[in-house]
Length: 349
Image: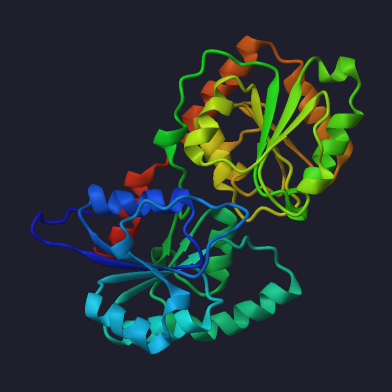
């Protein structure tokens, strides 16, 4: 969208939390698109305590205000666009309803994939009745979410794509070495299937492992169950900038999740030039993994399928790993913060 230099667009963000990758898009709006922003967040994720770099006067904590004070603050800000993350917060819904009535364009995020189960179908019927009350557009992370949005009654011209974008600049590291180290980075919780990964990796013979090590980086309730072994190293959560040292000599990235609505981490490590091993429940794989081209997909919760995928990587030469890594980077480069920012601004066109 072409915006005159003298015209300033004000954008309000109502968020649950503020992960680094989402903050990167907001920062792009501030620094490149020259928009004015105000961000309100509900809480910080103690398992992924990302540092925030947005100026403090632009960042509000939802818990510090009552609904009326928040609404008055937002009305005084006078935004043209309001993005709200999801539909669960009754306080946020009350606010966006008021803002929508005053002429603000409301954009809702959606990262839940369409599963077609009973709960989603019932929720879909209710949402169809409510969407016109609260939202003008819906912003989805991928095709599974796009199908859900269509089912909710949004017309295709009201559905925005590429909600989640990685900080591609921060993860675009120079890699000359592909050593025998496979990385897992994420929350150490049941939905990530980390215990299956550790068990499967531990069950490999030395010949099958072929000298590869597993490095696990993250925090969570399962961390106490995972201990260092001669072939497994466990490290605490790292800021994105700290991960570069781990990426430089890594040979591949793995995400074995049993449930992953999207997974920005997939684009991050694809951009870092790593081959990928993803379960078929990682929805970001639809965008950033081509099976057999830049890595391998396996059937979630299936140890034999996971084992086959790992052994294929472990038997690859360094040149083959490098070639797959270059392909990953090519796929990851298709989406960046410029596209993200202009996707949001397009609602005013």
